[in-house]
Length: 121
Image 1 (tube, rainbow, N blue to C red):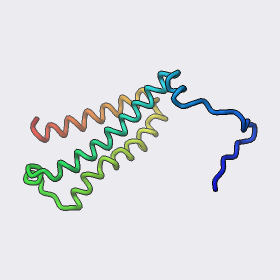
Image 2: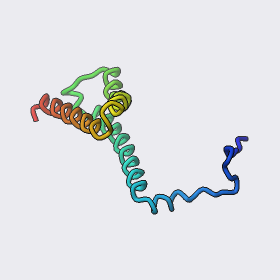
Image 3: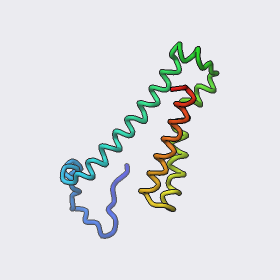
Image 4: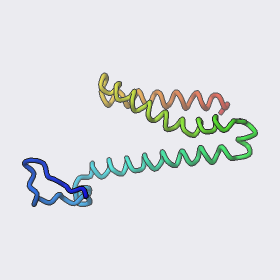
């Protein structure tokens, strides 16, 4: 059985504040938690949309793919997220959080523009 052992200097009788109360008292913490939750929800939703689009008849006719290519297409969202976080961490250390967000925005807009121009939209 695993038991909690307080660190040296921690009072074992001290109770931690309730999480909900801390969220209500600190609006920035609440906004950060909600934004993170919505981000995770949308990430999972995108994976579901991509995998369901792969089964649409129109998509199969326009983009014939093998099973390996379909697997790569579904997993590339996770691979891109991992690589993006890894690289953006290094960029953030060099140029600050504000400008690294701008770099990520430029990369996103460039990728979206290239993707839409390929489709002729």
